[in-house]
Length: 281
Image 1 (cartoon, rainbow, N blue to C red):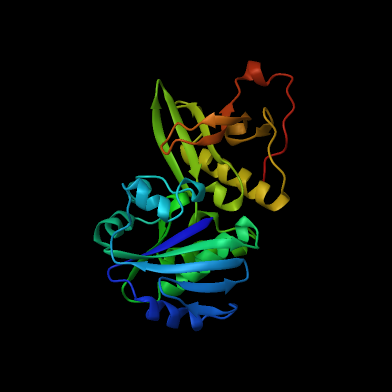
Image 2: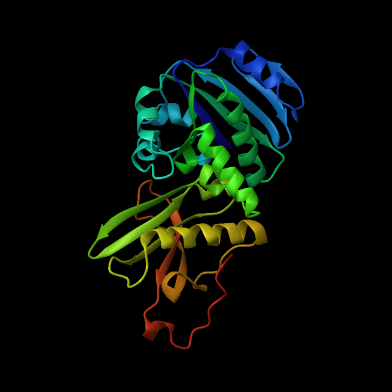
């Protein structure tokens, strides 16, 4: 299941949801049912429902009813999205002031994970036209974005013939202690990939942590465009002109607990005699 939400001060009722969705192009039948609106979309059946309560960030039972771990919903995701808000600074305020939300879930998928996520973005943008709408929330990616920033990201991505991943996927940085930093991407499963992280020395010469985040996004773009999957131990040329080796099924260093692809930079001695694939682009 692929899931998104729109946070509101006051969410529309089902009739309001139905009215807004019937105005959108590209949809099939839109049906007003007792507890939700059923939408036949290009990527499958989407259920849309309003909740007159804040997102249940610390309530595992309620999160399970909204899709649960299978949909990438983890306790604390909204709070972390507000705290890790480099892309959109008002995110933390949005967390505090919202009082309700609209929940969108692809319950019968016919499209690819990427197509599903893009359709959920499109539907979310429609609800952000409501003056009471605050921002879109992609809980699996712990990403909060308003319509303006999503439009900017999508426009920039289209200019580069890339996916607007930063609309749905959060890039995060943390101090892992013992002289190491961690960069990670959360939410890649929304586009059919495992999450990714890089663990590297804090004093890595001539390498910015944001360059490492960029490298992780580049690899994700490459895989989304070319298809396939990484092999354990594959080596790519990456930030700082270094060679970075991937390890599959590692335990994530940053919450939530999950399996990730972990990248580490090789020392000159480790890199000697190893082949490396070209940098992803």
